[in-house]
Length: 146
Ligand SMILES: [Ca+2]
Ligand SMILES: [Ca+2]
Image (cartoon, rainbow, N blue to C red):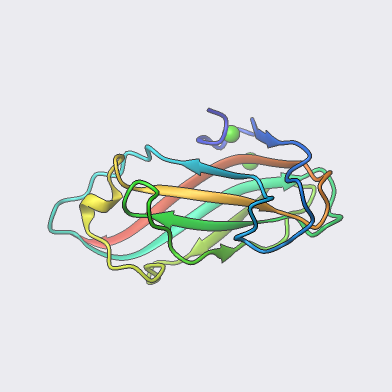
């Protein structure tokens, strides 16, 4: 799928959403879930932080297009509070959410980062429903002590 490698091939969400609300929880926004990042950590790993890296752009900046980003440790049943990206521009750019010492409010075990458990959700937000979101890549860096 285009969104899993940084190759300037894009997953495009055209005319995103059915309403102009700009809250992460709005049910009128398009949301997509990404998984199978093939994270394999030793069972004893201590997770210190997660960094989600997005490469993305929009076709126009009107409506302040951006992403709400959440992660899940249980296959998408439960999600962290959303982090909000900077506004997208018309150039492909990197947006980094989280950091080496930010666990997104959750105490992770290594198993919760496995393909069966770990999920990333992106919600496309703009106050204009004609906005097109182009996502080149979604990736995650895990910072841990083995
Ligand atoms: Ca790119
Ligand atoms: Ca891509």
